[in-house]
Image (cartoon, rainbow, N blue to C red; front, side):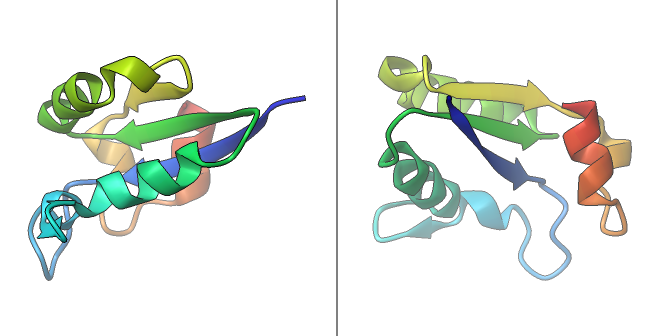
Length: 92
């Protein structure tokens, strides 16, 4: 049985704009999370974001690993500061 790792990545951070794509040690913060998740065997990664630009970047940079990564575009209404993560999971 496969497990699922759910990675929510919204673009609306209040303190640090687009923090998921701020660079740390020469790669975006979000890529550290994806790379860690890819270390697990027999898993699927479900990455959910409201940012189409990020989707294109991830598809390009992880093109050889897309069989393990499902990328979903969720609406802004489920990516707000007060949005409930459960609602985003149900949407995906």
